[in-house]
Amino acid sequence: MDIRKLVDPVVDLAVTAGDAILEVYATDFEVQSKADDSPLTQADMASHHALVKGLRELGPGLPVISEEGGLPPFDERSIWPEYWLIDPLDGTKEFVKRNGEFTVNVALIREHRPVLGVVHAPALGVTYTGCEGAGATRRDRNRGGRDVEPIRVNAEVGDPPRVIGSRSHRSPAFETFLGRVGEAELVSMGSSLKFCVVAEGRADVYPRLGPTSEWDTGAAQAVVEQAGGSVLRLDGKPLSYNEKADILNPHFVVCGSTARDWLALMPDAE
Image (tube, rainbow, N blue to C red; front, side):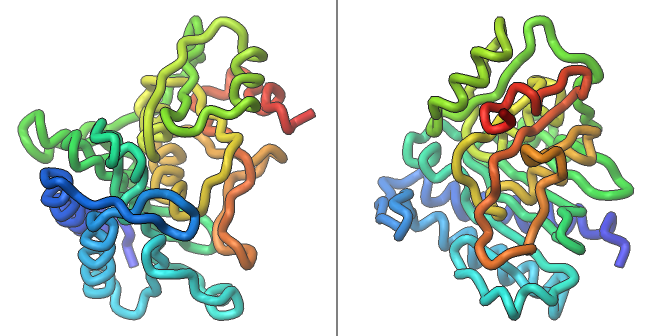
């Protein structure tokens, strides 16, 4: 399968799912509670159903793991050579706050690595893609439709460096990291858009020192890596997928330029 031919169809699916989210976003939506106490809206399930249906038609027989669809047993999924990994609505808290910084995330995982990723921000009209053999792109629906703009990480670290943080998850460990960086420009962003800001060169580093799951990161990791960046665990290895029973990620750092040793600044690196 030439995965480059999947990019446009997956973008179309993400846009369709995003449009379903926006239908709810425009209403006085109800917020429920999931088991992990994060907000759940009608939009989660509308996006989930659109994506699962479309992906199964796009690649018959290819499994789909969705945040809203439950996690198959590890003894079943551990033998999968490839599968779709989706988060139908990443940044639910941003959705509830109505700041627009939420995304639809779709990744193709092959041999524990994200080889294709689409991150679509429906309220912003922006879509990011990353695909092996095709690089990384940004598509802005608000600037004339589907023009494709290649993106790359910064070759050099900014002066001062620009550090991405979360609007919803600011931990003491993150504050420690900032102290070690020294003078820095802090850029707040929600959802997997934090990865994409690094991928397109608008920030230099995003340290993640709080909990995430694999469906939160797979699509955006593909975008960063195909833009020339890296997503590294604290042992220096790339973040990987479907290698254990749970799908919680370890702490990691998203790097643009490698001109600075960001791992050495991470609190857990000591």
